[in-house]
Every structure is written in structure tokens, then in C-alpha cells.
Image (cartoon, rainbow, N blue to C red; front, side, top):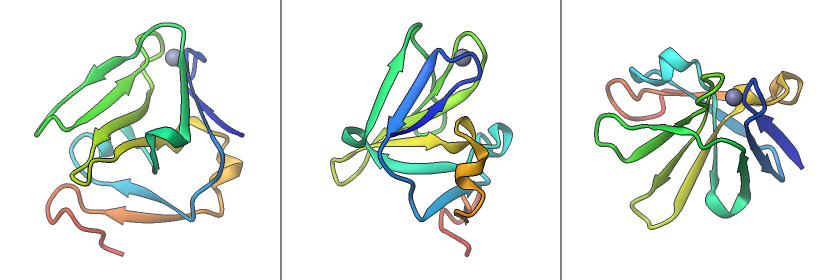
Length: 118
Ligand SMILES: [Zn+2]
């Protein structure tokens, strides 16, 4: 199991495998957070939290960004997708950077075209 957690350890995400790519998005929220996202379905991620996360919604409010109320890290977002699946996007910045140093980063233009640009 791979583990990602916020700085204080309140929120922990556990998942089986690394993905081949992670995503950097330049939208107004993601570029502030500095997140690098790995996309899973809800059944692939085990989430534990002592104290419930704060949820931040913006724009079309379809993504719920979960923020630790104690240390302020944005650990993941959840989203009901058009195909009916429940996405959990893990902010891989919460995991050991060694794990991700050879994983390719794809760039998503969330600010304008809403498409991958590489
Ligand atoms: Zn925390």
C-alpha cells in the first residue's frame, strides 16, 4: 500500500499502485495549491481522518477539494463524473517525493482550453 497524508497526519489516503502519469493543472485553484494530481476511482482509495476535512467548492462546484482543518494541506478532491464514476484525485504532494520522481507529469490547461497540452 502507498500512503499519502497531510502534514499533521490527520488525513491519510491509501492506495495500491502508482499511475503512469500525474497531472499538473494551471487553473486558478490548482496553481495556488501546487498540487500534482493522481486520478483514482473512489473504490481504489481508503481515506481516514481523525478530524473531518473542510471542503472547498468553487466554479461549477463539481469538485470537492478536501483541506485539513488543522494543517491546511489540500489532500485530495472528490468528483462525481459524467460517466457516473466517483473520482478521487490524490494530491501526490502528500506522498513521499521519492515515489514520484520518475513518474511523468502531464500538463492540463484548466485555466483556458480544458485540455491536456502535452
Ligand atoms: Zn493535517
